[in-house]
Image (cartoon, helix red, strand yellow):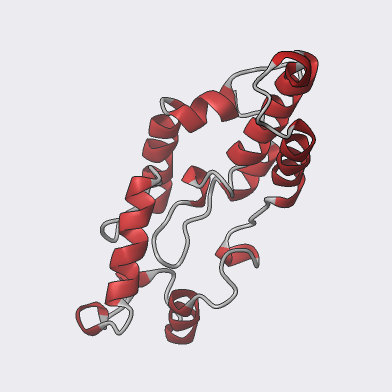
Length: 163
């Protein structure tokens, strides 16, 4: 069922902030796959010849091609993610795997940034740690949830490109 190389690259990775990279539409390849599939449909159905006239289809195809090929995040533990992430920097300095292992959590200077990130992640339906827990068990639970989500439909349904 797991036929997505990009997803497999980030599946086992939880960021320093607790976000599961496997649930990120950038990191797991869902945006890239969806862009490719939409581009194939728009060109295959020749929508340019009969679709709404107020759309520049050449620009649309260019944008979809860019999203298909340029969006790639390896996750912060493998050199991806935000280059200026203070949370990653802090965790590396303190030599902790993630914020939940930090002894200074209650006095964390990045508490507000974490809160904002987790709120944004929730809106994007990303999955993230809320406590120090067994990561392998979390990933197994999260993967089950992901397979039942909109992203799961993109990532795990067989199509001619991944069959």
